[in-house]
Length: 277
Image 1 (cartoon, helix red, strand yellow):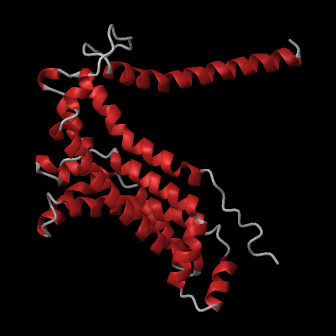
Image 2 (cartoon, helix red, strand yellow):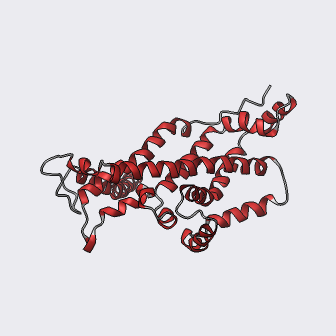
Image 3 (tube, rainbow, N blue to C red):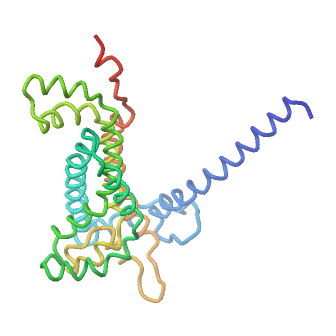
């Protein structure tokens, strides 16, 4: 076998492997899209006999979709905002000021990211009962932010390290405070990093079922990640068409968020010549 034929064989094998991996992602997505247009949908991936929007009409009601989605936006939006703000304030001194405690602190944060959420929910539930935060939106927002904060600080610090400190020193010379330099210089220059932390935090909160299921008790406060469980009826019966339609609607805010800030995600720091001259 010649060298050219070996390369061709390897390339074909790689292409086949990539097609198999792509199929594992495409087939579930195809089932969701096709089933949402089929009133007789089941677990098979099939083209519906007749395309209809009856499944969407059935789920587009305040009780099934609009109220849970609004609750999800309030919980995840508030939690993401709190996470980004706290992560920026925590990452700034870790990135700009050297201390012997920086490394132990970062290792502690790294350990916190490895803790399973189920292992800490029992003491968290007991604490929330004592401080009257159980079954409250603000309590769930606080816990969402606290659970995502360790990894957000890691990400934020790494991006912040890429901003030259000389730019801040110039601002300090002009009388700016460290908080002003963070707000007006560092954060605008690390826009892609802030976008990454925002998307990551929002997506992780948006798909979280266990936390709101444990901390919220009132059905009217449940987010969409919990209310989707209502499509699984008694004795194993599932309304697959409506479940697929709700899944598409439920995924829309995350897709829109990514599209809105995708330009910043693809941007660079472009600071190579900022400290020259």
